[in-house]
Image 1: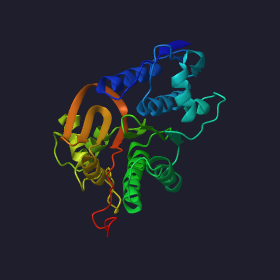
Image 2: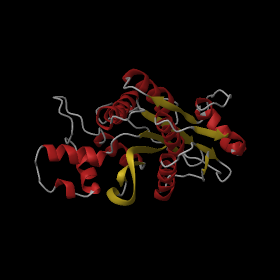
Image 3: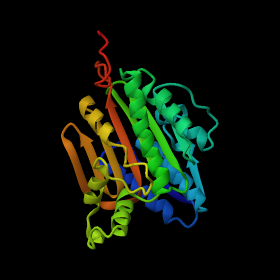
Image 4: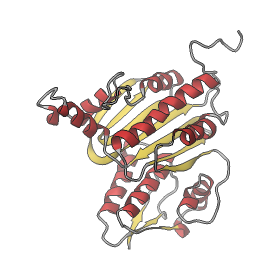
Length: 295
């Protein structure tokens, strides 16, 4: 079997390029792969969700995948056991509650279990001071990310999630990954079908991603509007001084306090990763229509 060395993975563009390279190595393997973590000192939630989805995608394609747990450093292993990733892939240790938002696999669009996960495991732990109404509104928008993965991306292995509360950095992270059709391709296909512009095939991915992020734009043919569900999230992460990042195909989008930036990349991953980073500050967040705590 081909041994793939998983490095330390954070969440800069170069770290995502490492993940995409791992996926390419898996896809080109002829004899199966085994993950070796000897060079890994840390894995962010994006890496956990991505490696889980990559493994399930490989297995569905008939590629054997194994984990060399003996190579995992103790502090990395504690995290992989706590969030349930290790248990999902054959390690005997059952997960436990802590600062992880558990690793999760969703093979079908099941709104209630996913909403419960987002409510109870992500926003309901008290790490961020938020009203119930705002929490539910955010959960509804993040559910749209899952719904779009199932409806538009049509990932054959579903959607993968993981998160983490980083106490020292005061960050609350959630990552959602699918291995289906990327956002630029779906937008290009949709615009081309409408014959809006015969030059659609030549539009760069960054412009197509920008189109997808624009409020009101949608590629669904349903009578019920469904875009990416991100406009409300964009407003909130800016207020919170957090960020929203999306990698899809050969494009990277980031929304934060500095605005919106869409960049074409030199590498390509056919699916989509979405990461929401919230800051766990002392502020109390609520909808503008809600009364304040003092009145």
